[in-house]
Structures are given as structure tokens and as C-alpha cells.
Length: 201
Image (cartoon, rainbow, N blue to C red):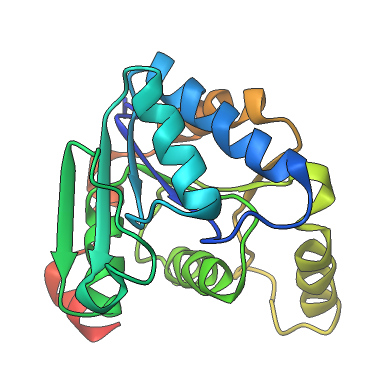
């Protein structure tokens, strides 16, 4: 039975316009710390990224930040984290975030958040991993994406047998229980992306 020790959170480097987004990020950080689940995230101190990481730390949890060198100043790397990994580029950042995480959560964010999320969904759809991927649908933020996925199914660009296996939680308190339940069903062998596969993606 698989256990949930680390969760990668993708989210915006800005706060967004809705105060519930930041509230949700802080609540998730608190929940991770209280469950003794390490946060893996993009390393920044600003916006949603800063809110979730600071909340984990403020509640006694542990954080790994992974940030490319060129973004250290722009995203104001958070110096309080227990571990900060600086990578040469975005590809290495995403690979390490994948390898160090048992599951993935997408909070509200922009194109970078969407790109990271869709990459994990693509790898999962292609059978490259079986780690849980969850959308934190705070104040219905991700509804347009769900509509797009539905449209892709209707037009058969997402065909039967190639469905997108994605979890969704409207409430922050439901995120960890859903991830733990899904992770418990993932065999250890299915969690790992073989290095030769990672290099080819």
C-alpha cells in the first residue's frame, strides 16, 4: 500500500483577484503540515506559491522548493524553506518536482500552472505514471478546464481508453483525503518514471 509523504503543489506566482484563492493556499499549507506531508513546490515567496509554502512552515511543516536559476530573483526565492534546489532550466525543475512527489495538486494559477498540470495529465494518460493528480477547484476556478476536457471527449480527441484520470476537490479539506485514498491504490512500481523515459519526454 502506497503512502503519501510528499505533495507537489502547482500554483500562481501572483495572488489572483479572489481572496479565497490565497485563503485556500494557506489552508492547504496548514493541512499538509498537520498531516506531516512535505510540500514540493516552485520555490517562490510571492503570490499563491508564497502563501502555501509560508503556511506549511508557519505550522511546523517541511518544504522543498525547486526553482530555476533565472527565476530566483523574479519569483523571490523563499529562503525559509528547509531545502531549496536550484536547477539550470525549467525542464530539470519539472523533472525533479515529479521525482520528489507522490501526488500533484493544482491550485489557481496562470499559464505556468496550467502547463505543469497538463504535462502531468499527459504523462498519466500515456501510462508514464500513476500518481494522483487533483484540481483544487476553489470558487470554481477550474470549471473552464473541465468544460474544455468535456468538449475534447465529445469531439473524440480524448478517445475511449485514453481518458484523463483527474481528481477534483471543491473544498480544501477534501484534498488530502482524496489524494491519500488514490495513492493507497497505486503500486510502487507504477509511481516511478523511468529515467530513460523522463529523458525522452
